[in-house]
Length: 104
Ligand code: SF4
Ligand code: SF4
Image (cartoon, rainbow, N blue to C red; front, side):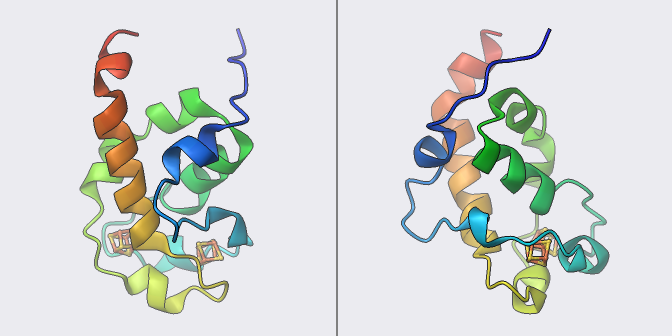
């Protein structure tokens, strides 16, 4: 069964005013440069946020919390996406929704 889209998801996740995942142009540089080899963060998870795909976002909690916040991806991003700020915003989102998450 396909989960319903949540049009307000980016707004709920992006309480930090620097949250700008929609700037991503999906070039893949961040994925290539990440020392942990994270495959879904940032671009795929950020795209899920922008598209309102909350179920898919919730499936990537481990990756969101494993990020080193090293900024290697961010300094190489040609679109100026605030990657580490976005990861922090996502962590706060998970913190706010952990009860909801565990109740699923
Ligand atoms: S490097 Fe920046 S623009 Fe390219 S996929 Fe990653 S976040 Fe998106
Ligand atoms: S900030 Fe996170 S996603 Fe970006 S390169 Fe570092 S560990 Fe990877």
